[in-house]
Image (cartoon, rainbow, N blue to C red; front, side, top):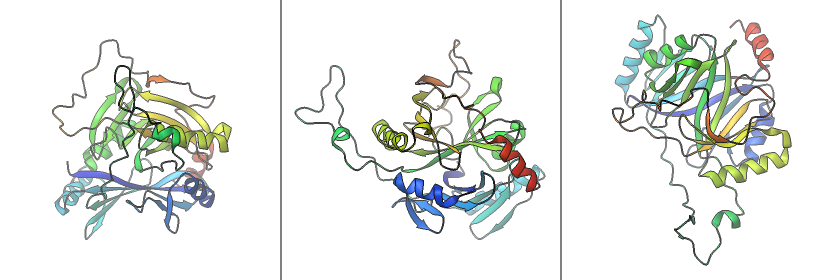
Length: 313
């Protein structure tokens, strides 16, 4: 795979300071002006000011300089231009208007998560001692930004841009709901394209160590703001990740996730194989219910549409 990782996202919001403080309370570090990261990866979310909420840049990594030339040619074949320099290439998403920056290199490796010894029916691995999760005082912070989901008025063209232009790979597609899961790493999805009347971000996602880490951070968020919980906890069907969705202070939906499917061998990953009784409209194997908001459409879609109009997009 020429592309190797999703490096970070730049989010434009009306009050970036409030969003930065929110993520500081969740364990992300301020590593520079408007930049949030971790000790291992200094840049995960970059925040800038704007009068409506949207993604302003997506940054991904590729293996080598020749990959940039291939991407440039792929974009040119679609009638799209790009700019490039030593070790980087930038392109403007033709639907959303944000910048996609591809850089030669790889994301810093993550230290393995602490393994919590768990007892299961018939197998007791933790004996005569309490669970680490029950005793833990320091709640694990998010490890990395994992994926972003976009709503597009032209899903086919958006997929064409990411796949034929930038070199993302298709992991799964749901034609019945015009949704396509794309990856630029071994994660099942780094980007999901789904239909929407106006180009928008549905949600962004951060990976946690495990289900306990999601639970501990999730309860912390709900205690701070009871109406922040949107959907979860649960486990998705496509991608298999455990999830819990919330609203951030800017009104954007985000997901804390763990245990996503990993794809290392394209031939072994049979993306077209489905159970005969599998319903593509079922998005979770189990879940605790969605709140009153429309999970598939941002609550501020009218504000986003007006903002895009002012910006001439």
